[in-house]
Each structure stands twice: as C-alpha cells, then as structure tokens.
Length: 255
Image 1 (cartoon, rainbow, N blue to C red):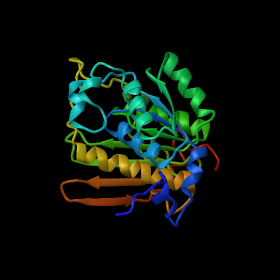
Image 2 (image 1 turned 90 degrees about the vertical axis):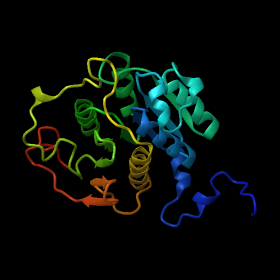
Image 3 (image 1 turned 90 degrees about the horizontal axis):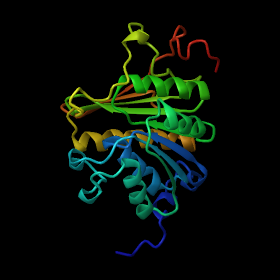
Image 4 (image 1 turned 180 degrees about the vertical axis):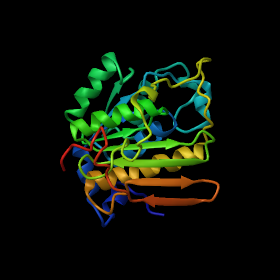
C-alpha cells in the first residue's frame, strides 16, 4: 500500500467541503473528560487551527477506561495532559489551556475572552446547570454551541446543536425548568462522579459532536438540532423542533 505523505491528503478528497478552511477556525471545548478529550483530538487531527481547552479537573485512574489519557498522566491537570497529547497528534494546532472552572474567576474571564474570538463552542460537561450557563453565554455572544452528553447508565447519548437565532437553544421547550432548580454541582458528596461511562458511547457522541461541528464551521449538509443515540437498540434519531418564542434565554432575540 502506498504511503500517504500529506497529513491532510484524505481530507482533501472530501467533496462536500474544503477542510483546509479549518486552519483559520477557533474552537473552545469546555470539559475535556470522556467526550471533550476525544472531540479535541478529532478536531486537532482534522486541522482546526486553534483549540481552547477548559477543565478544572485532574487526570484520575478512573479516567483511564476511556480514551486519550495515559497512566503516566495521573495527577496532571486534564487540560495540560491533553494539550501535550494534541501537540504530538498534530503540531499544526495551537492549543490554549485553562485549568479553571468556567463559571467563576479566571475560568470565567478566559471563557468570555474566547467567546470574543472563537467560531464555535463544544460543551462536554456532565451537569445540567453548567449546560444552561454555557447555553446562555453562547446565545448572548451569538456563538454556535454543540452540547454532548451521555445518560447516567452510560448506554445512550444526545447531541444538541444551538445556532443562536436559528435553532432552539438548550433551554427552549423546557417549560417546567425553574432557575432555582439549577445546580452547578458536578459530583456527589464523596467527590466521585457517580455516572457510568462507556468508552463506546463517549466515542460515538464525541464523533457526532464533531460531525455537526464540521457542518457548522464549513457550511455543508443539514445541521441536526438534536440527535438522540440509543445504544441498546442501536438507533440514531434526528429531532427537528422549533424555537420557543417564550424561552427566557433566546425567545426575545431576533434572527
């Protein structure tokens, strides 16, 4: 088999979009656990020019059942460990690391700065409250957000694409939600995440996030507002829904 000498040779053969345009794109990834770490690697290898990584956590032994992180990186900040990995995967990608919580302090300042210059945000967090926080900030900044998540039992997943002014935001069509019900707590009282995490589900959801990200960044295909993956049945459902005109986050914003 002939050796491929050009890093992006196979991407140049893609007929629906010009992947070389990714070099000028900036993407912020919030949360670099099972979803975010793999999504970051996909985007870096595909040629995205600049990645901003946000996560206040460190690599733990429990993270090693999934992809990307290595035993030798236990105890390191996830963003630092991932940045080193991405540097080896594709030196073309500029990687900026923020080992902070995006909802407060230096992490919040860093996120606001990235929203001023990035083209898209990938939400890879595991709590509802932080999802709503990112949704609100991205809608206000008019920056596309692609949220991904897995079910607590680890077998199902969902990808929600928010294009401000065009698609429903993450809070749309959730009339029962009240602000006082929202929490940003990520772990239980023991400090350990209680969710099941399957590497297969994480890989599928992260790949779906990146697929929609490519469509948004390169403007090809039909963006799916919501994708629902059911691992037990082996099905993938596309959901096309309308914006909620009374949504407290995006309802009063014009296209």
